[in-house]
Amino acid sequence: MAYKMIVLDLDDTLLNSDQTISVRTKEALMKAQQEGKKVVLASGRPTFGMNSFAEELLLADYESYILSFNGGKIINCQSKQEFFSSTLSLEAVQRLYEISVQEDVYIHTYVGDTIITAEENPYTTIESNLTGLPITLVDSFVEGVTEPVVKVLMVGEPEHLKKVEKKLQEKLGEEFSVMRSKPYFLEFTDKGITKGTSIEKLINECGIKREEVIAVGDSYNDQEMIEFAGLGVAMGNAPDDIKKISDYIADTNKNDGVAKVVEKFLLQDQLITK
Image 1 (spheres, rainbow, N blue to C red):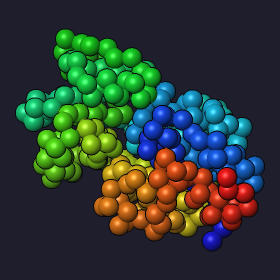
Image 2 (image 1 turned 60 degrees about the horizontal axis):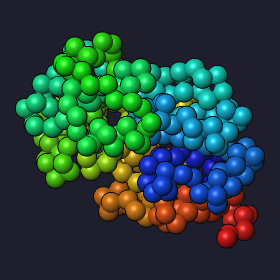
Image 3 (image 1 turned 90 degrees about the vertical axis):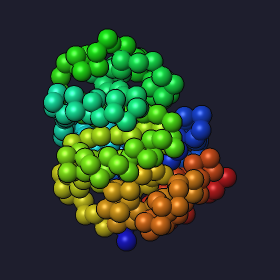
């Protein structure tokens, strides 16, 4: 199969533990783009937290895209315009806030390029450090959210959040897409919005078949895109559940796993490994 597009998760997939793209991985991705392949970034991060990596990989020069907020937005890197956007209503935000209180977890969301939360907590601080977005503390979470938002996160201690996830997937599965991106992040987007559904919208726009797409990820919010793609790839550091639904298991993010996938399936091992 001649693959035409590779879609990459960021954290623990494209990025090393120090939040950088390795030299080998960058070289492989640039070579792929020079040969006409599309490189697309897909993350749970807000758009702001993805832009620097899109710029590093020159996605605008190659007329490519980023999928932010777990597919809640699709951005054309060249024009900076939103190709697609889906939001949660203020009523939905209030409902999720009330549930977060019942389940004893923290909650935050994004208004503009700011993280909004009513309580200081270590997990929202982690999100701020990852994305580069500042935190705005508000007296009332519901009143602090003044416009529809793309995504809401409930955050907390991983073992407790795992139980909350199972409960809320059963309770809210008809209203929201509910998934964990990290052990301490439980994410909510509008029903039917995932990285997988957004890739489908994108390839229809680009005239690319799903069989011509590689999707690479490491976590539960990558499951739908791994299942959707012609070649679904789980990182070597992914949990076993994600590895089981993949077509191919790559090396880890710390060991140039993405570069090796690009070399094997897009460049046919043309690059000299280092």
